[in-house]
Image (cartoon, rainbow, N blue to C red; front, side, top):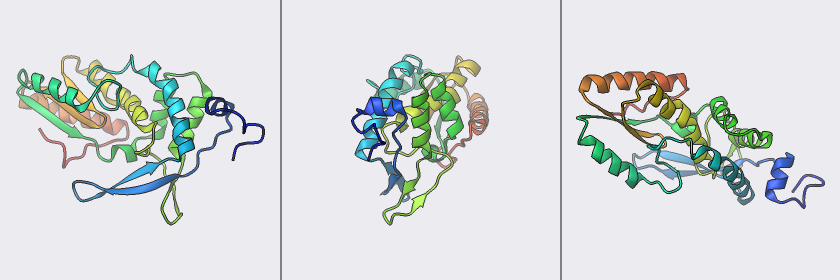
Length: 226
């Protein structure tokens, strides 16, 4: 039910007016290949429409800024593209770091996500709704609510873009600044880094782990290998 005086507004107008309040996100558990469970946050139809509106505002601003070797959830890019580039680079580099971030979507810090968003828009209403979506509780099938203090639910229309915006600053831009000659491919939270030697690979792993820790994240040691 809309706010008084706003029921006749379309989604963009209603969002910019500040009258839209996201409901709790429905939690759906799906089995993972390793035997665990992945919790998806499934938004309502109205919520998904609102997220698509915000995404349509943000995406044109950030796409030209994103690193060319960021492949996940981007228009015209795919995992196959990342694999093709990775295969070519493996011919020129003897060592590879295969890294996965531990529970990335569940642990990404809200303040750093919002900082990344603020860097690409001066629209207060966009920041307002991104913050509301981040903080919306998950709702189990029995109706109980799960309050959260970090993370962005997998399953929403806006989460993939927020993830890429966060990782652009947490990893991509940092790599360009600190290791401009080191090639990598990133598909959201799955990262391949190429190295010339075992020593360089181990040094990179330590430096990247430290950088991720600064950003509130950690490597999944079981899935990270040299």
